[in-house]
Each structure stands twice: as C-alpha cells, then as structure tokens.
Image (tube, rainbow, N blue to C red; front, side, top):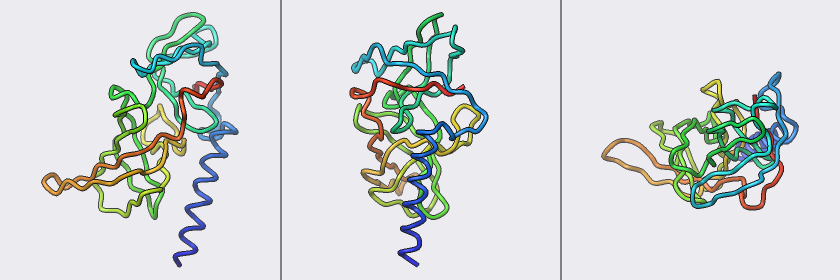
Length: 180
C-alpha cells in the first residue's frame, strides 16, 4: 500500500508539472507569452513584456515551466507589473498533494519561503508537493507552487503552519506565460 501511495503521489507531481509546461492547468484558457524584463527583489515584483494590448489584465496568474511565479498587479499597454508569490501581499489557495490533499491559504514570507496555513487534520510531510487548489476562478488547480520544507503545529488555534520552498527560481527565470 505504501508503494502504491508513493507511486500515485509521484504521478500526481509529474502530471502537475506536465500540465504547467503544456498549458493544461485550465483547459480552454489562453496563455500570453511574455518575458521578464525587470526583477525587483526587494519589492517582490517583476516587469513583464506583455500588457493590455496582448490581453493581460489585473489579477491574472503568471507561470513559468516550473510553476506559479506571480500575479499581475498593474497593466500598461505594452507591459505589466506583477507581484511574485513570495510577496506577503499575495494570497491564494494552496493544496498539499498527499492522500486526499490538504488545502489552505498561501502567502509569501521571504524570497525563499512561502507559508500555507491549514486547519485540516491531514498528513503533511517534508518534501510533499504543493500546488494551487483551484478553489478560485483566478488560479486553476494543479499549478506547482513548491515543496513542503517544514510543518509547525499551533495547538492554541488548532492550525498548522506549513513552510513551502517555492518551485520557481525567480532570479533565473526569463520566459513566462500569463494565464487568461
């Protein structure tokens, strides 16, 4: 049974990665190709080479071949500004891929760490894959976010704080897609 569960989890991670690379996280959604033309690490912000003329709108997710990178914040005719997922101002649903999945609210903490706050009693282990939950119309389910780096329980509130290492190395990424 343990081998079966491990195989299923491995296949889920591989499928999530393939969906991101091939643009399948949201069948029927369009992708706008863009390049990162500016990276402002201290502001958790990137500038994209695509804007309103290409169909980019505020709130659209920005992905790379490795996973979720940012969320569009402002749009000009030929460029857009997006906050990276590591920004504390960006919040979205996350899902730990283990058993039936444990969902919670994601937010950035540092350039190398995100936080997933969960209420559910589910198994979460270091190394588990974390993807978008799909519980909103903005973020389709299955876009890779990162991997669990640490789990800390807060018995006073009955919650757990899951620290997640991002899947995307923003500083090394140039080509991205904006999901419509």
